[in-house]
Length: 498
Ligand SMILES: Cc1cc2nc3c(=O)[nH]c(=O)nc-3n(C[C@H](O)[C@H](O)[C@H](O)COP(=O)(O)OP(=O)(O)OC[C@H]3O[C@@H](n4cnc5c(N)ncnc54)[C@H](O)[C@@H]3O)c2cc1C
Ligand code: SF4
Image 1 (tube, rainbow, N blue to C red):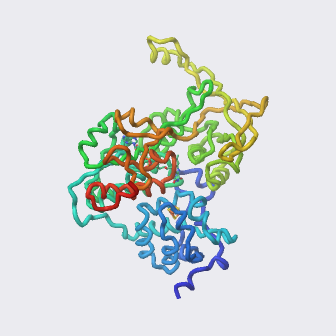
Image 2: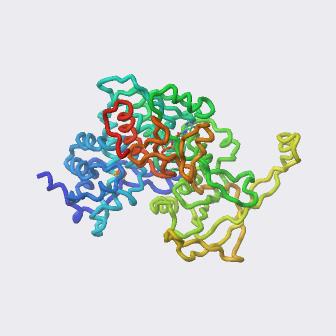
Image 3: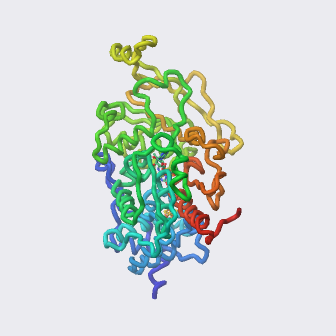
């Protein structure tokens, strides 16, 4: 009987939840997909072929039991589907929204490979847990036994939060320190609301708080409290600080007014979305309204910037990327969304230099620099664009961009956003910690199974270990680290591969 509801991929075409029109979504920061109707979710879940060896599951970093919760959804047994889904994923509704499914679960769906179009795994995962929230099935974690040992977590992004959840369920006392005023890390202040609405993250933070996790916000470790002080307060420490140093451009005039970092631009926009007052946004430095905007980069951060600029009412938005569409790192789904919303992609192009014009604010500049040389304030006016062609593949097999001599031209711009990726901050130096080993890229060295660093009792997860990565990998690390920390503190659980 149950299987009659499955294997419908031949008769039922793939359908995503309805996408709002580009004109409508350019007006606000709400998510662009509407929710599945119950019947549609069941119908789409029923397309799963229930493979004996599910490749979707093995390519999901959390090894979610995807075929099981698809079958339960197809049978209308949503409460059970939710219970199965949350066993392996701390934030299923978040992953359902923002995982690059085409590279993970859905990209490895067998029916996709047979030409029928993948099961809409992400949209169904989101639907299951959104339904659980609506129906009050999501309960605060109440540990059966309280333990005396405490864990200090630095960083309230998905890595830190997933570890906090798992540790609290085991009864440990958990304190999370974060330099921002809200928890969630890049889920709160990096990723825009049109991909992940903010209340979806905030209700998760609240759930953890209700479970007894203590949040110490506005607390920059290394400035407001030392790393050693945190070590002294807790029996184990987890570092989950992410990567925030912006890769920069080594170009003339890269410090002109109006040339900004993607992280500052997106953080300001997200704060405005929360209703906060953001002076740099009000003063318009970080606001694209009415401006000719150029975003430099071809990754997901660049996609988030161009689409944010559209929503802020930019006059025009262009994205410069030095390779072509087929070779860009950003998701094709996001490029398509951006194009629908009016973004123009200028492929095989990069900035050669920035050309500014001097604004009249000499007095302010002099005042700010009383003893120094007299400076002028200059504002971006043009980006000199260099054209590229793709040359021979490099050692990684990727074709390298080569400059086409004499093809430069000037493109007028009022706001330039640098979205070239992120690197780790130098934590051992910033925190004055001897013995915390880092790799040659500056990421923290940690065992990939136990997440133990070079300092006993100190663990590390997420982007600060992997380099810029994904929410789902940070969640996986956080869950695994919780298990190791449990083992370290109690001597009972595994301490893998030591
Ligand atoms: C613009 C953008 C869009 C993205 N879009 C996606 C997407 O669509 N899908 C996806 O899967 N991934 C996406 N990512 C990547 C994803 O957000 C990260 O991989 C993930 O958030 C990493 O989690 P984390 O817990 O390691 O770190 P973070 O989320 O970066 O959290 C780290 C936290 O540590 C805090 N912190 C840092 N230093 C200190 C300190 N000294 N003291 C106190 N607190 C500190 C920070 O304030 C922050 O809250 C995106 C990233 C960016 C920048
Ligand atoms: S967590 Fe991400 S990769 Fe795993 S099933 Fe969900 S959407 Fe797919």
